[in-house]
Length: 541
Image (cartoon, rainbow, N blue to C red; front, side):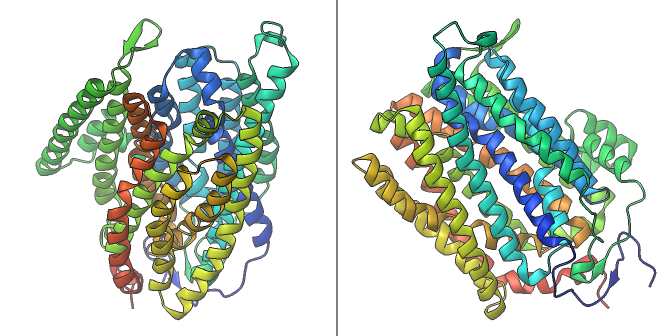
C-alpha cells in the first residue's frame, strides 16, 4: 500500500536503539533541563523580586504560573503540529534561542509589567520543548525502552529544577555581596544578574541542536510516516483555528455547521460565567492592589481567571478544529479513555507539583530563617540529586513491570507514587528543623519522582507516531492551563488570605483523591486501549 500521512506503511517494530540515539537523548535531556532552569529560577528569586517590585504571593503565582502558562500552552499547539511535519532538531534550536533571549530580558526589567512580558516570551519559546523533543526521541528509541527514556527526561527536568535554585540563588547572592546598594554596574540587582547568567547556556546548546540528525518518523514503531508536504501551512492554520477571536474566522472559512458554532458559543458563555465567579471569590477572600501595565490597570484575580478562561476556550477550539481537519487524529485521541484519563492525571498532579515548587524556597526561608544562598545550595542540590536518581530507578522498573503486566505495570508504579506522596508531604512540611526537613524530603522526593516515566509512556503509546506532537501539545495545553496556571495561584491566594504558607502548600494535595481513582481505572483498561490503536486509526488489516 502506498504510504500517506493518514495511512502509513506498517512493519515490525524495531528492537534496537537507532544510530545516534544516545547522543540525541543527551541533547534532548539537556534541552529539558535548560527549559526548567529558565522557567523555575523565578522561585528562588521570588523574595528579592517581591521586595523590589512591591508585590505579594498572589502576584508571584501569576508570574510563575498564569502569565507563563497561557502563552506556553497556546504556542505549544502550532509548534506541536510543526514538530509532526518539520525538522525537530532545528525547531528546538530556534526555540531555545528565543526563550534564552527572553530570560536575558528579565535581567533588564524594572517593573511587574516588563517581567510579565519576559515570562510570556519564555513561555512562547519553551512551547516546543516537549512536543518536538518527545516526538524526536521516540523515533530513536524502541517502544520497550521508553520508560527508561522518559526517566532520563524526568531526571533532566529535576536537574534543571535543582540547577535553577543553585545557580539562581548563588548568582544573586554573590552579585549582591559584591556590590553595595546603588554601586552595581548598570544598576543591576542580584536577581537581575541571575537571570542573565541563566540565559547564557541556551545559546550554546542551540548550536548542537541545529546539527542533530532527523530520524525516520515512525520507523521504530513499525509505522513509517512519509514527510508532511506543508508543515508550516498546517501549523499556522492550527494557530488561527485555536486563537480566540481568530477561531471564528477559521470556522467560517471551513464552513462550520450551525451546531458546531452554537457549541462553541455555549462553551464560551459557560467559561465566562465560571471565570467571573472565581475572580469574585478571589477578590473577596484575598483583595490585592491592581497591577499596572502602563496606563492600564487590572485586578490580579481578574487577570488570573481571564487567562485561565482564554486557555479553556483554546482547548475547546483545538478539539473542534482537530475534529474538522484531522478526523483520524480526533478518533485516535477521543476514542481512548486511557489517554483522556492519563491527561487528567498529569494535569492534577501538576497542580500539586507546581503549587509546591513555586513556594518551596520561600517556605524554607520563612520557616527556618535560612539565607538565600543556603537555601539555593542545600535545597537545590538535594532536589536535583533525588530528582535525577528517582526516575532512573522507577523508569526501568516500570519497563520491566510493563513486560510482565502490560499497561497495568506502569499504572501501578504511577499509583504508588501519586497515591502515597501527598500523605508523606505532611510529614515533610511539619519537620521541626531544616535538617529534619531535608532528611524527610529525600524519602518524599524519591517516591514522588516515580509518576512521570510510566504515565508519559502510557500516554504516548496510545497514539500514532505522526500524532505525538499534537498529543503532547494537547496534554501541555490542558496541564499548563489547569495545572501550572492554577496551582501556584491557589497556593499564593491561600497564603495571602491566611498568612500561613505551610497550610496553603499542603492544602493543594486534596487533588490526590481523584488522581488515585483515575489511575485505578487506567490500570484496568490501558492494555485494551493500546491494542485498539490501529482500529481507532482505521489502518488495521
